[in-house]
Length: 529
Image (cartoon, rainbow, N blue to C red; front, side, top):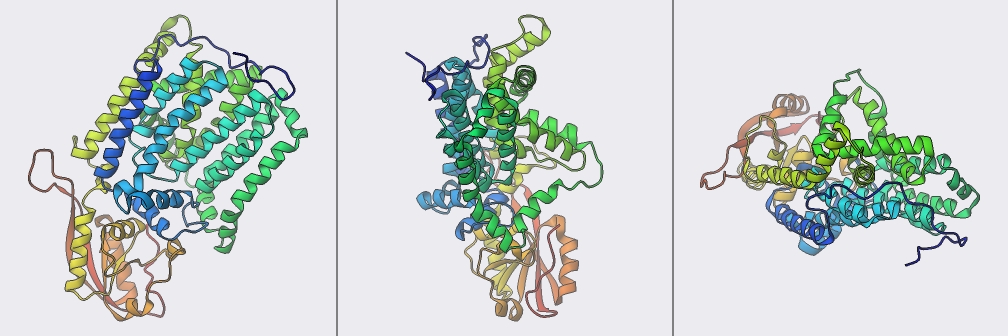
C-alpha cells in the first residue's frame, strides 16, 4: 500500500527512528491480547464505579453539573458538562456520575495506539503503547474517578494526534482540530497553557516546520482556540478572576522546602508503576537527545509537550507539595515516549537488560498493582493511618443521621465548613433541610443564593469533620450568639469481607447547633483551611 501523500505531492517525512520491540511485551503483543486487556479492565472499572462511593471532589463537581456555568471557582466547566452528560443516562448515582469517564479511559488506548503509529509507523509498537497505558495506576486507580483531568487527557491527546497529522501529511486543515482541541483542553483545566506553549516550541525548534509560520492555517487554529477559551475567560473577568487567580496563584513561591521534589518523583513512579516508569524515563531522555541534537519532529513533539510541565512541577516542588494527578495529561505522550524508546534499547549491558525486563513484564506487573489497589479500596486490605480511600465510605448513612439530627433539633439548615462535606451531604442526602457551606460563597456562584431568612431565623445544624472540630467551633462562637455541641455522627468503612458487622469508624463528625447570628447578612464563618 502506498503511504499517504503530502499536499505538495511529496512522500510523508520519515517516521521516528528505531527497530522492532524486543522482547515483545507480555499481554500487549498482539491485537487480541490488547483488546481482551482493555475490555476486561473496563468491565472491572465499570463495576467498581458503581460499587465504590464517590470521592469528595466528585460530589463537588456533581454540584457544578446541577448548575452549568462557563466557569467555577476551582476549574473550568468541562468536568461539569461531562458529569451532566453522564448522569443524563444513568441518573444521580455513583455509576451514573462515573461511567462515561471509565469509557474515556478505555479510549485512551485507542489514542495512544494512533499516536505511536503515526509517529513511528510501527503497528506492533502502537499496540504495546495501547496496552501499557492501561497498566498504569493513573488508569488502574484513577480511571473510575471523574475529575477535570478526564476531559483534559482526552483533548490533550486529540491535539497531539492532530499535530502528528500536520507533520505526517502536511495538510493545514489539521490545525483547526489542533486549535479546537487545545481550546477544549483549556476549558477542562488551565494546565492546557503548557500544551499551547509546547506547540510553539515545536514549530520554532524543528526547521522543517517553520514554514507553517507563513501559512494561515496555524493562525486559524489559534483563533478557533481563543474563541473556545473566551467564555471561560469572560466568566473569570465577571468574577474578579476567581478561578484563574486561584490556579495561577499556585505559581507564586512560598517557603523553600525541597523535600517535595523527591516525593513528586516517587509519586510519579508509583502512578506509572515502577517498570513503566523506567521505560518512560529512558524514552524521554532518548527523545530529548534526539530533539536537541537532530531536531527530529516526532521527538520534539513529545518533548515539547511534556518536559515544560515537568520542569515547572519540579520547580513548584521546591516550595510546596505537587499532587500526583497534575501530570495525568502527560500520560499518553509519556507512554508514547516509553514505546518509542523501547524501539532503541541498548544492545548489551545492565541498563539494556533492565529495560528489556521492564518492557517484558510491565503490563502484568502494572495490572497486578492496579488489582491490589482495587481490592484495598473495596476491602481495606491493609489498615493505613492516612488512607485516601476512606473518603469513599460511610457518607450515605452519615447524611441520613445528620438529617435526622436536624429534624430532632428543629434546624432549618444543615451548615458545613468545607466544600467536601457540602458535596457529600448534598449528593447522599434528601435536600431537606438544605445543606449550605457557611463560607467561601464564591464556590457556589453558579447557584441561587440560599434563603437568608431561614439561615438567620432558624437554628443551623453545623456538621464538622473531626480534623477541624476546634477551629470551626471557635469560628462559630465568633459569629453566632448561641452555639451548642449536640452530638456526633460516625462515618464508617465498608464492613470487611465476610464480616456481618459494620466497619470501623473512618471519621467522627461533630454536630453543633448554632443560632442568633451576629451582624447582618449571611452568617459567614470564614474560609476553610
